[in-house]
Length: 109
Length: 115
Image 1 (tube, rainbow over the protein chains, first blue to last red):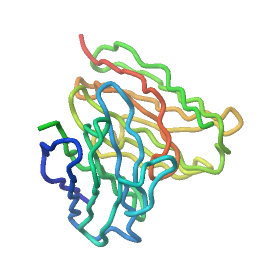
Image 2 (cartoon, rainbow over the protein chains, first blue to last red):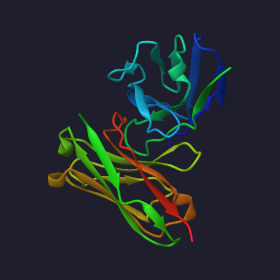
Image 3 (cartoon, chains in turn red, brown):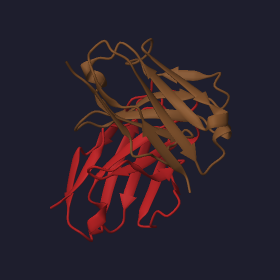
């Protein structure tokens, strides 16, 4: 089973700042099958990025994903007030289990 | 528009059983794998189970293997999660989602296991 580690656990930033979130896998993820989700309190998660770098439908271009192998990054270029949330990475390479990382909380400084 | 409507959650005693349902619309249900994902109160997301398009391939997290069974009815566009021998640690909101990366989510259904 691939274990995902996210860092930092909490990121305290101000609106307008750049956010860089990391997701590291315990082994290489095939074909960059790595997704990122945003979740706000009381809501279901929302897909942001799939295939490590492809934005999902309707996702603003301030969100970008990069990386391959075992190291992946989600970048939010300029934080908007609605971006303060918890972010999860998930791997879906080869076959299940499709594990999630523990999450990074982005909160207002 | 993709819609996923989960139902069947509720309060159940430890050791009890529940069957969750997820009614899907807005996409060709029979051509996508389906999944269940859960989230315990105040915790992160946990993948629970996946079923292949035809229902012949099923996969489970170690935490539910042997207790939960996923199934699907393609003509009814519905996926199910049969949960037996429920434990307190199964308390969570349960979501269904299509594909292998989850681009659509329902509102979830809350399962509470407590005496």
